Amino acid sequence: MNRLWVRLALAFVLVTISGVGIFGLLANWSASQAFSTYIARQEAFLSSGDLDVLAAYYTTHQSWEGVGAAVPGPGGPGRGAGRNRPTLLIADASGTVVFDEANARVGTPLSTDERARTISVIVDGAIVGYVVFEIPAGTTTTFTPTQQAFLNQLQLALAIAGLIALVIGIGLGVIISRSLAAPLARTAAAAHAFADRDWAQRAPVSGADEIADVARAFNTMADSLQTAETARRNLMADIAHELRTPLTVMQGNLRALLDGVYPLEAAEIANLYDETRLLSRLVDDLRELALADAGRLSLQSREVDLGGLLGQAGAQFAAAADAQGVRLDVRAAPARVRGDPDRIAQALRNLIANALRHTPAEGTISVHTEPLMGSVRVTVADTGEGIPPEVLGHVFERFYRADKSRARASGGTGLGLAITKAWVEVMGGRVGVESEVGRGSHFWFELPAV
Ligand code: ADP
Image (cartoon, rainbow, N blue to C red; front, side, top):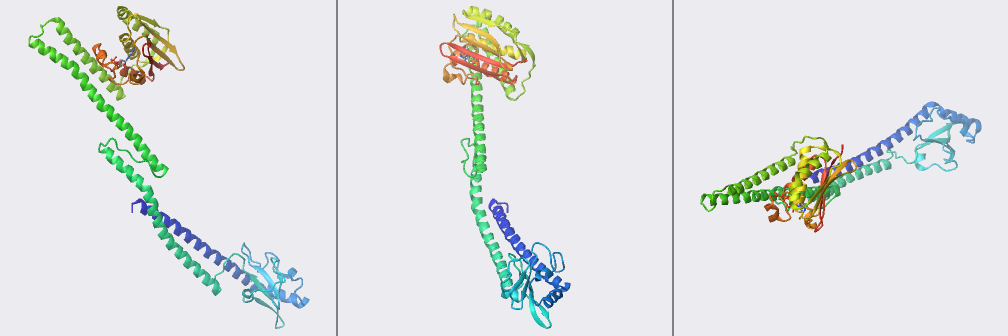
């Protein structure tokens, strides 16, 4: 009962049968309606004395000429009323129409059917004329044997039509539901397979627009779930890898110290200490990203003067830039944005530290702000090595390093840009980069202006 084809077939059959039924009822009703007005007018005519008026007219005039004036006026007895009001005809003794209310039949003979229904006008025992009520054209009366037979036939035809509707309805229900339900069933099968971790499973897009839309929506959802699943697996592998490297180094060094291979000196212990710092930075960074993902990064959002932050960052990196022979040019124009000052300062430090790491001696790093529509852009531009176009789209991804060995040796976790992006986005801003190999990179972030 709950199957699509059964419901569709029932719907088709119901609609057709009710159509046939309503048609039959209306036909019957209109026929009996016409007949009852006919009977009503005839009876009213007979009881009104109008027949005597007509007989008197004939007696006076000895002809039917001008009888129209003697016929009862509108609304008078026997006129009947309503849309299907039967028309009054008067015929002479030979059966030729001499008066017609509708003015269409004068001069024509009465039909056989009409002759059978006449009311005779009798003067001195002789029939001088006939009165007959025409049955309105276009309506069916049911009461002569031929008409009754016709009606019976009509009812039989309607019953047969109902039966045929039943068969056609069931047939159509099966055919249409098959074509509707088959693509749905395929989408359901794909969804079950996908739930069983068959990540490559997709639904075939076919059928009516709405059903094809369901398949498309499922496929889009499957795509993003598959991407998320791949990202999750990669992240797990990356984290394991990143944790293993410093641990292996520490373990090896400790073993060597224990075995007396390395002397127990402050320099060796300082190396080990550096590795633990790298580890804890990695763990802190991962925690920041996990919080940002969960939407639980706590922000102390307020009005911040970017000029001040740029000045502080410039002062912090001045010595390192000097030592590297790089010119650090900070233009700290006042610009007010909304955000968490500590996170903005850390984002700025990440970008400047990256620029220093990738800019050789004699190079320049310039840091400046630029007011835009509704926001302020901070740009850190360097004249360093630049980033190849095929890599550019990935630098904000977690654990992405263009040059793996070098970045790691210089203390990079491959998370700095990912964290910068997460912070800036949580503050309602966005990040970006333009770069050209050999000419340098422009990293920027925008924050909502106050
Ligand atoms: P890392 O800790 O390795 O620096 P980041 O997320 O900060 O990680 O940067 C990701 C990668 O983007 C870096 O490994 C580096 O290859 C590239 N990169 C970042 N900043 C610059 C820059 N200013 N010039 C060239 N390459 C850069």
